[in-house]
Amino acid sequence: MGRRAALALLAVVAVLLAGACGDGEKPARGRIAFVSDRVADGVAEIYTVAADGTGLARLTTAPPFSPESPPTGVQAYAWSPDGQKIAFASDRDGNLEIYVINADGSGLTRLTESPGTDTLPRWSPDGKRIAFVSLRDSNAEIYIMNADGTDQTRLTRDPTDDFFGVLGIAPDPWSPDGQSIAFQRGSLFQEDGAPILDIHVMNADGSLQLRLTQGDPALFSGWSPDGKKIIFLTGGLEGPEVYVMNADGSGQTRLTENLPADHVPGFPVWSPNGKDIAFMAEREGQDVIHIMKADGSGQTALTTGACDGLLGLSWSPDGQLIAFTRGCDFEEVEVWVMKADGSSPTRIAEAPAFFPAWAPTR
Image 1 (cartoon, rainbow, N blue to C red):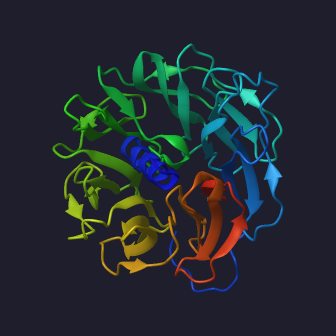
Image 2: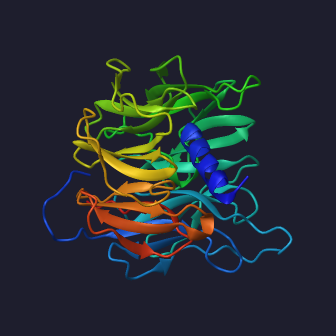
């Protein structure tokens, strides 16, 4: 398998497991985090950079390790709602565990310590709790803990897997009011090759677990900013489409209607005001970033580069800019920023750089 094909396959698996357009010319402020294994040891670490490409800073550094068994490094991360901290999953100490660090790289603290994998940390909207996925009890289940790592509690108990994504592009499972958590239940790999995945939602304490979808595999992609709707992918591996539904599962509506067979949408992301949706789609071998209104109208291609958005899309908090990845091979993937209308694309982080995420502002 070629490198580009392998990268594309990784992106598809990541999805399966796992703002508004402004007219002003003033660039959005803030910093963008990303993951890179650019140093000689090949360990993936977290970096941040300003939206104009200045002020590159490395936040994490793995402790000394044996060359015979090097860690992979950071495999998932998330900004705290106030943009002051980053929670991340790393095998820096041998096992995949969850850590937290200040936005300037200080105050590294380990939050979990279990024999099984702990990964995909996601902060509650008030910043007081962190939901995460753990295999400490043999299969993937969803847990919750306080932001300091105390009171780790299992929320789901199902013989199949419960999760809300994989890698750095996993969607935020928390509803904007912090009362609910959306997740996927099922199994990606079946003996007959057909995945079984349904979207569920539960209260933040694990109660009232409700299935919202059934039929074709459905892939949770995010809550609308007002918490009234959920965007998701469904339609099977051969050609998933972008859908939206009410938060209770009703009103399921297809947004990307009758796309060509080679046009595979992925990673839909709401704008901060909920009026627009950015997503990646492949057409004739080129991964292109599109934008559309929340009702699916006005679908417009924003980029023309190869593999744009394949490993991440992120809106700036004010909705004026979009950070995205460009590049087909891991060693070629860069982070770029463009205006929300697709103009003024600018490279802000050289390869390798992937999974960009804009720091929240309050």
